[in-house]
Image (cartoon, helix red, strand yellow):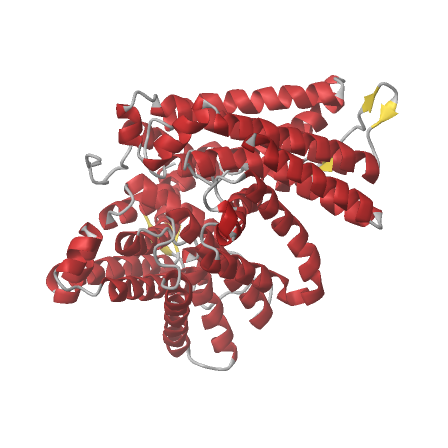
Amino acid sequence: MTADLAQFAFSGLTVGAVYALVALGFTLIYNASGVINFAQGEFVMLGGMTTVFLGLFGLPLWLAAILAIAATVLVGLALWAFAIETARGASPVTLIIITIGASIFLRGATELVFDKQFHALPSISGDTPLRVLGAAVLPQTVWVLGGALGVVVVLWTFLSRTLSGKAVLATAADRVAAKLVGINTAAVVGFSFAVSAAIGALAGILITPITLTSYDVGTLLALKGFAAAMLGGIGSPIGAVVGGLLVGLIEAFGAGLISSAYKDAFAFLTILAVLFFLPAGLFGARTVERV
Amino acid sequence: MQRFLSPLILALVALGVWLLADSNFVLRIATLVFIFGVAAIGLNVLVGDAGQVSLGHAGFLGIGAYATAVGPAALGVHPLLAGAAGVVIAGALAFAVGRPVLRLKGHALAVATLGLGILIFMVLTNEAWLTGGPDGMRVARAEVFGVRLRGAALWFIISSVVLVLAALVAETLKASPTGRALRALHDSEVAAATAGIDVAAYKTVAFVVAAVYGAIAGVMLALFEGFVTPDVAGFLTSIELVTMVVLGGMGSVLGAVAGAAILTALPQLLTIFQEYEHMMLGLVMMVVMIALRRGIVPSLVALWPQRRGLKR
């Protein structure tokens, strides 16, 4: 039983780490611009798919991965420059529809440029499972967890220790005030799209050896990431990470102990219960609405 | 008399399509547009008037559609009676879920409806003994006074009549104190509450209205197609419904139908682009929303100078 529970915990943390990175992408863009970017899942898909296809040209994995992240960042910047920046000042729902349009477009472009098949990537450190508490843990799981931790540490250091990071935080706190003290808030939004794309692509590359990838994996990831961000409290980076890991764990234990057919339901039921008691999410700001 | 304008325009459009349609194919597409138009008009009360986003609205279409299919198959009830029960269930469910959730602010309803929609989709997919699972199930043909409800022409007429009635009810609601309360809380919940509006109660009304419209559309869809699959309740259908409302124009009854027409008919047109179909759909959504950010109908109405004084 302990082995089973440990197994559920590790698989939950692995998918949870990916949800956490997607939720972090949502949070960065939401904080900078107030936009909920439903193309966030497509960044993950693009990272995985591009690496797979660059690998087919004989590029080593690390080079393919770097190029794939760079390509995804370009896509993120293009989405910001051509769609979000041109539609500046439109209502939030309009912006949401634009990002949904972008996600359909990216999915269509991927199935055209690449294909509609499922693809795998080789694991970075082989496929011999490690034994932890009786559970079989793939070495790739360590890479996923380590990668997620690395992203969180780098992001946290950047936001709290550098001037540009503080500009991002200031924009998140109050866009107008940030503009008044001379922060280029449009650039901050563009930057947040680039970073979100990079984080998404990295998550996609790390998880592909375990879960495979195809042109349409982004939708479900975006849903879970959005739910995770809401669970943690939208706008809170810590909340996004905790929310993502929790959603992953709830899913893994729900599927393992209760019913695998309804695994997607457990996470959403928990989120509803949490929102019922903590409307702002676990780590959301307790604000008073001003008129 | 403003509230009779959009039902009248819709009736004239339906008449025009009827006169110009040269094949059953055109009538079938138009019927689908009208059925989704009903769902979009309902969702527009929630999204456009009350300013709340639902990401699982297809769940209510699923309830209507599957009630119509399962009722006769499992209980031997008349399809229309089963459909009516489905509409009541959808409304009751929306009330039960909406009442606690709509006390919350912001995107809470978006997550709640997202979860609800996924839950409904999973029940329809997993409980194969009742619903036929992912493959879907046949719907018994309804018979009313000895007339079998089938054929493109008959369903075109039925869907046009329901669409015009749906538009009339929605416009009446908009012009009523409830409609004004919804627009007030859309602008500012705090201000609306200060003015004595029970914000949560009115948002729940909008949510129930949208659910009932969705379920009615689901019932019609099941009877018209004669077959249902869980896809009717899927996340993509939910996204399409929200897109119809926003693309056509939030708060505009005609806009909702225009959005339904574009999202239903466009994929048919785009099949000529073959493998470029999805790319084109995404591109059209982005370009329309960037160029006409208030939605197609309100943006075009604003371009028409004489009407500027009348609107708002």
